[in-house]
Structure formats: structure tokens, C-alpha cells
Image 1 (cartoon, rainbow, N blue to C red):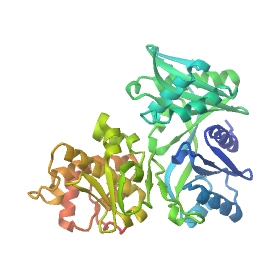
Image 2: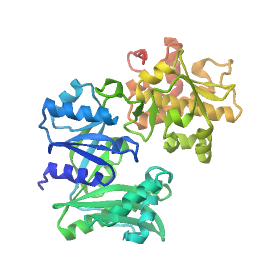
Image 3: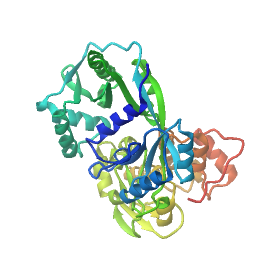
Length: 430
């Protein structure tokens, strides 16, 4: 089966133009930007094909700096373009795989019913989408506005799946030329592994076959969904590398917010010294599953009342156990590796919960590498580190701190179940 890759890319650009502003650079690159959806997926630049020029890349980077964009998507087959991105200071942080329909697929579960959404149910689709991807309805007004417009678009079909009459999952189909793109495949947490996603994909393929269209979809490697799509009759066609460059390395206007490319959070790197509400410095953590595991139903209340103190000092992040607030070194906040800051925040939030539980954070009967409160916090942090794609070497890099000796560090790794390589590096100065 021959599929024109540029047609797939334009289907994606056309679909997301319904959600974000699109700026085209000739016909071979575009950028998405959105103030309503302040997260990386809606704020990125994408290059189509392998042809490029220095002038085009300069124009894209200037626009990215102006809008505070950090992500650049490049076809992994484009060696020269990959090299150009690396030379300009970008680093690959994830991959996006493009799948096309091929071969047999799983039949829909008898308990799952898939319906095409009409005008009266558009808000229901928006609610299920938000609860599936974000876990809350804080963006309902913005998403409902987009979905109402989609409901009037003849290129779009919105599907919703029901299990025993209860809404359980959604997806959206978008048509261009002889293609049907499948987007926003989401299932409510309580209905996962019950055939909902498979039923939605089967319905998409059924409609595409009737119209003589090729079905395709995309998924991030970090989402770990590739085997699921393969089991439902899709095969990988190609991959795209997602590059990131910190705002401090971009030309043009500096920005104060650093968006995490793999997560729906942002970090205010230019927060001034002093005390701030947690959401002003670390935005979007209430939507992070690891944080919800820490605080449960109290997540929003805890984070909205939590304080962060930015100080000109030493170290990284720690908890002031008397004032029950997180303290962050301003230099580390500005210059530290984004993944490390994110993981440090997760770690310190575990300590905040421990304080609420009445635990002693700094029990001097234990060395740092043996202290139960530290090990509890690090174990959850390491789960999150692996989820966002840190390999063993980077995990060891992250764990290495100046105040732990080499012998204690080896015992620390054993306590945490982290395998020790032949030699370990010290954690670099962030």
C-alpha cells in the first residue's frame, strides 16, 4: 500500500488547526500555537518532508521564540534535518509513530456500543475527552467551543463509546482527500481494558472502508500504546522525532515559562525571590497522575493552598517542615534540567503529604540513603522518571547528589532497586 506521507502530515495540520492557530512556512513547515490550550502538543513547530533551508529554519525559530514554543517535530528519516536541529541546540525527547490500517482487526466487544455524535451530545463528547486525557473538566468551556465547531464540519465525525449505556470513551475522525485520520482516542479510567478503544478503532475502520479511505493515526512513544494499535490491525509506517530546546537557548524574545514536552505542566523559571502560590510557579501538576496518587481527592485543595518559596541559595528543592512549604533555589529554577525539576517537585510533594500525615521528615536516626521518608518519596519519583522515558543512566545521574558519598550512593541505589553500571557519573551542576 502506497501512502503519500505529506498527505498524512497535512491531514494532521488541518485537524489541529481546529484547535490552535496555524502559521505556515511555505508548504513544508507549520507551527501550532494556542493560548487556550497552554500545553506543548498545541504549541509546536512541525516540518513536513526533508527539504529545508537555513532561511526557513531561521524564520521558524524566530516565530517559536516570539510565541514561546519549544518543540520541533522532524521526520526521523531526514538525516540532514535531524543534524541541523541538533546543531541548533535541540535535543530529541520523544518519538511520534504514524500507523496505518492493515490486515485483520479485533472485533468490537458486545458490551460496547459506538455512536456517531450529533449536536445534542457534543458537550458529552467534550466531557469524556477531558476526563480521559486530563482527569478534570477545567478546560470544558474551551473544548466545548472547539467541539461545537467540529460538529458542523462535514470532514469530521465524532464517535462516543458506551458500556451498558454509560459513556466510556471517544475518538474523532478527520477526512482529507482519500484519508481518514483518527485523533483523540481516549477511554475513561474505569473502562480501560474493556474493549472500548478497540471498538472505537473498529468503527473508524468500518466507516473508512465504506468511503474507500485509508485510516491512519499517531501515537507518542512515551504513551506506550504501540502494541495496542498493532493488535488492532495497524502497522507502523514511519516515525517523527520530537526535539526540544530550552527557551534560554532560543533567539528572540525570552519567555518566563518552560513547558514540559511530555507532560501537561509548565514551570515559571523566572519567578522572583519570595513566596508564591504553588500553581504560579508549577502549573498543571494537579492533572499529573503521579500527583493524584499522592493526594487523591484532595489534590486540587492541597496544591491551591501550598506555598513555594524561591530563594537565592544553594541546593535544588526541599521542604521547610516548619512552614510546610516547598523551597526552591532560584538558580536551579532558571537553569536546571526540566525533567529533573519536574521529578524534584514530585519528590517534594510526597514529603508534603508525609508532613500532613505527621511523619518526621528528617529523622536523624537514619542516614539520608536509608531514611524511610526519603525512600518512599524516591520510589514514586523513580516510577515517574521511567514513565517519562529516563533510562537507567539518566536516573542514576538524577539521583546523584553532592552530599552523599560514593559508598553511601551505591547502597542508596540498592535500596531503591536501581542497577549500578560499571561506573557512575556525578550529577552535573544544573
